[in-house]
Image (cartoon, rainbow, N blue to C red):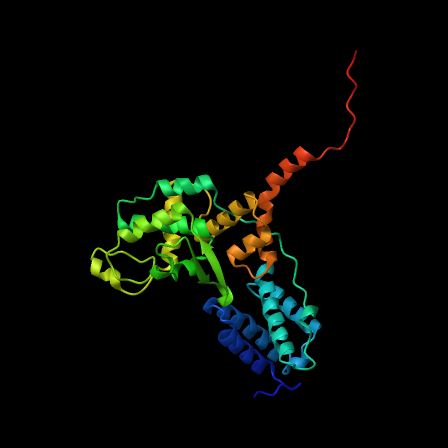
Length: 315
């Protein structure tokens, strides 16, 4: 069993924290890579400033590190600077849970204010335009249409989509997936998404277990057990969007935004949308609430009155 003392070195703390996130938290490779990068830079700064043990880190030190980031060559954006601070806070929370005495409280670290997030999303009519340019006479075209339908029907992340197996979804209107942080959530398919997916799967002659795959001129190559890549899916959606003259960036994540937007416009509550998107925090989901401004304005106009007395009718 590891002993945690006030003499615990920062380098050791970071190493154990990253191992904990890998083994116990089930973070994605991308999340782990980012945490490693942010904390490695923080450790380098600590070494340069003669900070060796975790108990030596103060709130003022973290502010100095933040100033260092701002003044460095190729200074990261305010949003990215906050990611560094979030990584440090997570490290301190981990140490506190391990009962390491004398470490700085994570609550003492304040994130910098950043500009409000502007969510770009795909509207229903734009989805219809994209669907209209997909050539469904080929297996690849049927696949592409099914991808577009499922992304807009479920709000799946692209990383979640490419991992899907045929046995997970075949002949099902709902199934479960493991999302960020290893969290399991339900996913629901609309009737149109089910139909598009069925048409695609019926056209396949391979034994590949993945739901979405690359289709080759030589059909036997389709049996290679690997999925279509996220990059390929991003590229094909961009191509379809340009083909129907949509003058804004259209990506798989924008379809996810469109899914959330449509739910809120239709009256879904924020907690339900949070669960369907797989967000850990309701704060993340709140970025979508601006899309309801139109309906709020209409509700205000319809139901609120300033009780201004009307002029009496002239006799």
